[in-house]
Image (cartoon, rainbow, N blue to C red; front, side, top):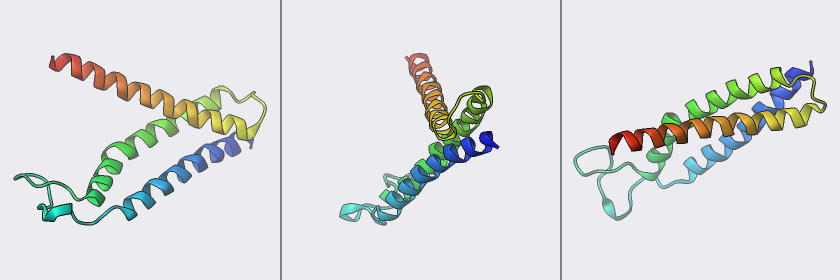
Length: 115
C-alpha cells in the first residue's frame, strides 16, 4: 500500500505541473502579433497557443511518460525507504532528471553528428 501512495504522490506532482502548463497554454494569445499569417510553412508561424499545444504534445507527453516509468522503477527499487511522501517526491525528481539527462544527451549527440 505504501508503494501505491508513493506513486500517487509522484503522479500528483506531475498533475500539478501539467495543470500549470495547461493554464499557461490557455492564457497564450490565439493569434500572432502584427497580423502575421498563422500555420506551419510558407513563411507563416504557429500562434503562441498553437506553439504551446505543439510543444506539450511533442515534448511534454513523452517526457512525462518516461519520467513516470523511471519514477515507478525508482519507487519499486527503493521500497524499503521510509516516508511515503518523500519517496514519491524523490521518485518524481529522479524520473524527470533521468529523462532530462537522456534528452540532453540525445540532443548533444545529434548536434555533434550534424557537425
